[in-house]
Length: 314
Ligand code: MN
Image (cartoon, helix red, strand yellow):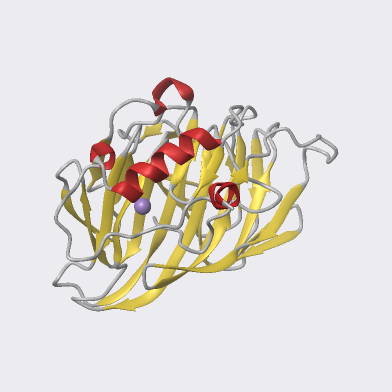
């Protein structure tokens, strides 16, 4: 996902003092942004919270009307140090990348791209789909152990599903209630799409922190309401959470062990130092071989130099 709106560097904040009781449910507002030609609600990162587990970015995109020739329309752009998860709940889009992948993703399907030291990709219209597009785009920060390795791409045509009393679920990444997703993850992580039919108690891992992003409907936790356009956060320490609903509600649940490596996020890159970001910026700006090339119907996305470099030039 390309984020043209925010070029500022953002340092992760993984060690906030534990002043709140463990049972507190934190609700924050998403901010509106435009990605390609579609409006999104960006739940992560925000000022008070940079990561949830290794999850470092969460956009709820659409619903938006797309045509055969106009849809996500995100031209070729680079990534490093992260995995991108695309989960569509309505519509279709075409993914192309510098590994040579050309993959149509449809509603109920998942794409997972691992950037490692560098990859580039685009999200295009399919040439044949007209209708509503809605989904989520998520980023996962890669740990030191894998972030300098090669790129990778996986497509899941039918992510595994399961049932609880009161809800159906799809496991996007990780494992939940003995249902495991086959796609790769480099840290202890869970990504779940939960279709809640009636109020229920959801089993959690006490060593995980969690976030919820509602896609449809509304729910309540600890008496606080969570609706579309907000992020709900649960600290580690719970082995279950009561979710109250008054009607069918669909939510994404993101979980993971708190990510202890301090990350530096700039544009589409996740690194650790400005020097690393500078190198990646240079490679994309100069068009060297690092991020590869591929054929796209859209122009390559340029980017201004990091603000700290512009300051140095003066
Ligand atoms: Mn991207």
